[in-house]
Amino acid sequence: MADFDRRTALKGGLTVSAVGLLGTATISAADAASGVAEPKIHDTTAWNARPPAGAIEVQNHKPTYIVVHHTVDPGNVTDYTLEHAFWASRSIQNFHMDTRGWIDTGQQFTNSRGGHITEGRHRSLEILRGGTRHVLGANVGNNNSTCIGIENEGLYSKEDVTPALWDSLVKLVAYIASQYGISPEFIKGHRDFNSTECPGTVLYNRLPELRTEVGKLLGTASPKVDLPEWPLLKPGDSGPRVRTAQELLRARGFAVPVDGLFGQSTKDAVAAVAARNGLERDTCGATAATDETGFLGSDVWPLIVGSGTDPRALKARLAG
Ligand SMILES: [Zn+2]
Image (cartoon, rainbow, N blue to C red; front, side, top):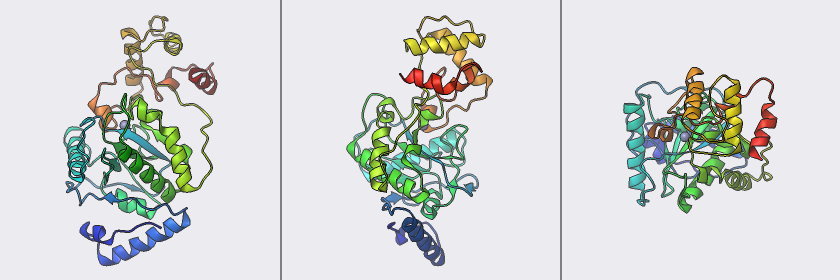
């Protein structure tokens, strides 16, 4: 059964009658699902968020995917306190509002290296407790209406997450999955949607483990992911997959060498495909903090695969 924190809701400015309604809705949603306990989530009032600069859009449907991100900034800090988690939440909100020009924090939830979970975009916690609707965020380009995102503090391209972060991530994802009835195979990484390093190769490679652990908490069988995702290729990479990409780019009219080396001309060609098709860039904190020009990932592959190629077969071949 969900653990409803009445005091937190009151601090958030809800009336007593609203608390009563919310409490009822929370209990029934939790009972209807498998009853994963709500982890401690600190709402926007707790970390002293700024008010949003526009109306929060609440969509009348559940999200389809739970998406895992890494923040990149402020790096892999060793300050594991709640105070630091609150500071990081404010810092991300300032960056998203003042630099990105968004109305509020892009992601629905943030998870610190100390394992402290905070609400990101306003109303995300209230709507999650209801279990039927979706707060529209800004964290997965072209896919925000189907994705609920969790930003994990740190950079996980080479280093692993802290045990505390992992533990709270499992609990938060399981709670979200339980509230919305989302099956573990719909737990994704940001790179499954956009051409980005996010959530870092190390954390991305732990997603099968995350699906298994969440499945255990939900009481479901170990999930199977039938099809591999498109691989992420980056400038500097080499090998047969780069060669395949170069062959596809040449077939699209780009004068790139077919040498299996992801050099400047291949990077320029991929960047041109992304720009020509208006792919959204800088779609989460991590992507905005790093230069990912010319990355070839999930949203670019379908644009360079010719009509004569079966994408499913190609995906399988690239994975093998
Ligand atoms: Zn991301």
